[in-house]
Image (cartoon, rainbow, N blue to C red; front, side):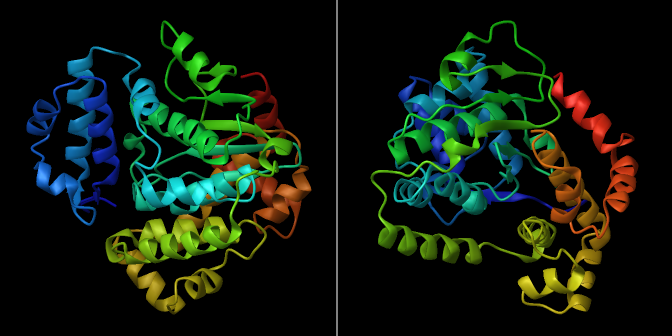
Length: 339
């Protein structure tokens, strides 16, 4: 995506500024440093360059001198700050349904970041990634997003559900007591992916305050908001999302992905080429990412992983995984098991 200017909706930065104000930071100074107009920040339809978003975080950390600012910011942010997604999660029938909708509609909050999840027989992984701009997943942002999803889903579902563990790709800080206090589970650092690991029975837990009628209405509204997001410059992101959906038991071929995006295969290939990307490269990237998610918990058979990724035979999947990672699926499982 070289040469493509990336901008995002103001909702995420507005929430961060609100949290900073509640923590007593000088938000006017933060806005000046980011060259961000307060009027623009309050416009729900406005978009700001991602460099300004980065500047907000940088100045907030500088002023706070708090290495755990991201964790503390999400603690003080009131429920409802993320509006549709907060209330959609609060009406969900299960904890898993709430988290799935947060994943589905997170592009409304940040169009670059994705929150993919993989459901296994005993575990579910829920990650934070930015395939088109990996540098977005800094330590502060990874901590903020995973803490936000965890704490806000607890509030939304009225369930104080536990996590099995949380993993971050950044190095271990000198003091992790705040991470352990927030997530109430083992926290690992230096991992390949930033993710939460949730027990499958927790994922399937019913929510006592669910409202299926409201859930359906808000789901439709969130889908409408998602469909209104600009698409031409983010065709790669839309293809990734479509492939991710197809990898949950579908057929991730060019024709099926084009059908999902309401265009012909030829048009889809042309629009990807305009961004300097080939469809097969995106498919390989998403298969590799999904393969790691499926393999890491260790409770999904290799034959099932191959099927879920659209491979006709396990041997084909094994060769592909070796090409992607330099390891066999078995070697990868052994390595992640000791992390």
